[in-house]
Length: 136
Image (tube, rainbow, N blue to C red):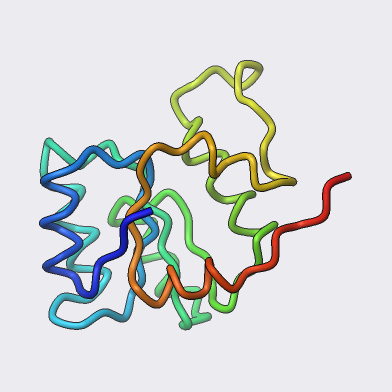
């Protein structure tokens, strides 16, 4: 997992490495998440990377704006491992036929399916502190 300290760094990382998914915080230094998302979706090299927005904002208008710009999903902080996995699974498999999509939403298996993830430093801290869901 790769983390960025701010919006400019996130864009530079996305330009330099192929990521499977980007977890993007709305509140970041230098460029906010809206600006970073818009630039990612406007760039042919990064437009197809699924972006899941993560934010302390729990306002529908902000979530709607993110989806309109091109985010696959929006998750409010604090989040837990089960909710994050449930959001990542469809984002990773959006282009696969529905019956061919692996069901990984109830466990940490998505971590092994992702080669590269980019997220903000605060999101990485929360991921590190999230408890792994119990296996069924």
